[in-house]
Image 1 (cartoon, rainbow, N blue to C red):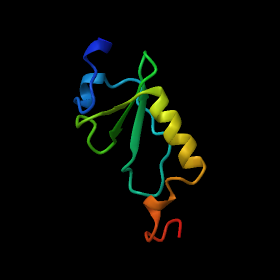
Image 2: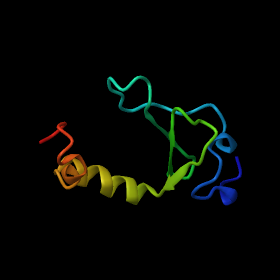
Image 3: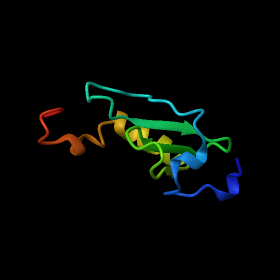
Image 4: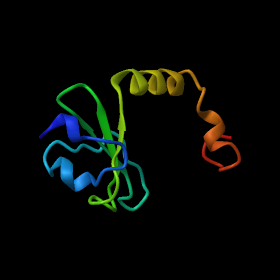
Length: 86
C-alpha cells in the first residue's frame, strides 16, 4: 500500500480487505464503524455496511485526542436527548 496516496475520503476498498476491525459493536443490526491502523500510525475508519465507501483518515494524534476526550465525557453531548446516555 502506497502511504503517499492515502487521503481522507478515499474509497475504503483501496485500503484492502485485511486489517479492518470492529473495535466496538452493539445491538444495532451489524451497522458498525470499522477501524484499520495504517503502517504509518494513521487510522482509517469506514462504515461496515458500506465497505467500499469513503474512508476517513485520522492521524494518531487526532485519534488519541478523540479517545481521551470521549473517555473524559467530552463527547457525551453527541448522545444528549437520544435516550442512550441521558
